Length: 390
Ligand code: FAD
Ligand code: PHB
Image 1 (cartoon, protein in one colour):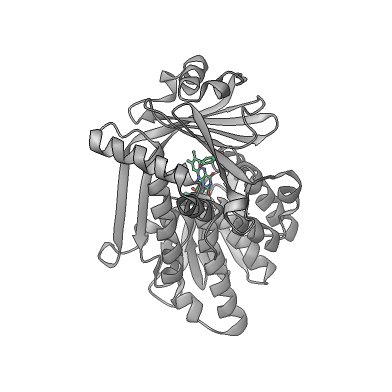
Image 2: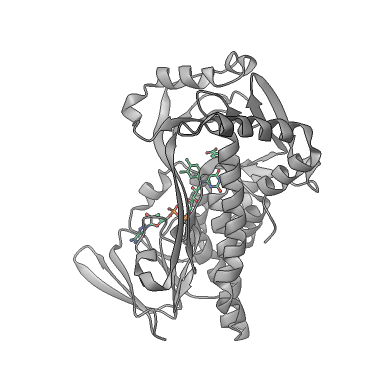
């Protein structure tokens, strides 16, 4: 088999890149380890920046998102029993975010790939990028009993944090930056009306909580839990009792609860690998960097990588210019680090850090009170939350 760009990973990054390249006439093949149903079963991101939505439209898969996605002009921060609204639209130049689930946008991308006749190979096992330092890289993989070789000009690793692509980079040529947190988020999805029309991020001495949503009838709630906890430790009753305790009374009083239709624990981690390219292998999305979900930046940062990379490949194939490919890692990382900073800051602002002492506790309280009193601080939060330009 031969293609121009071999893409490893059929999550949102891989599918979006594939669709954008196809629209510009660049041939590509996506290799995905799991089945389509498995990929669509993952409940993850919910908040999209405008830049992400723009890319979905450019990829000709934005219609349903534009019809069904909810524009959010602000969100709430709950602390000490009160709510403080961050007016995203008013604090930026009219910018907003879109609430549209990762499951839905992945479904739209798969349908887009089908409509254009794109090649996505599912259940590709033992995928391995090879000869990435040469002009003729290729990928080997197995499908059932068949061993297959995919020759390509370039390979893009979009295979998430646990994928194979990053492992292929020679250890002595890369630098890794990491922060691991001692807690995770326990998330629950329920078929109930959301407690609030806007997201509520809550700081509480018992730990962080988040009230999010997918639609008028579907709620997504999270609470901070120790990493040692598993979903089996948390019945629905215990989950909602704890969530209510962390929210202001006027919010918990109106919360409608129901049986969970999904429950999972996500550990929190900050990670970046530099550079995001070696030879003819490029990395994009969670394969190269991850953030704690507090600032809703993971998928949105994956989108900016995809933007820079697809633009660079278009320059190469259509204009014969390799300048953007050569600068991909640098350009992508400049934005990646800003998302890292913001996600770390928002995590530090709102979570309980059991290992920290009274001094840090006071600093956290002061940061929140400064945020409440300063328009400049609020504008900075809003600017980052809606997404820095790319
Ligand atoms: P992934 O989604 O991990 O996709 C990688 C794909 O590669 C997978 O389909 C996998 O099966 C495949 N793969 C792996 N290994 C191989 C292999 N060896 N061969 C072939 N295929 C392979 N981000 C936001 O922007 N906003 C939010 O609101 C938000 N909320 C979140 C909430 C939670 C609880 C979590 C956990 C994350 C959240 N994120 C959010 C982050 C977001 O979900 C990720 O950043 C996003 O999924 C990254 O997409 P990706 O395509 O790069 O990687
Ligand atoms: C979600 O709806 O899953 C979500 C929303 C905002 C975040 C993280 C997750 O910051």
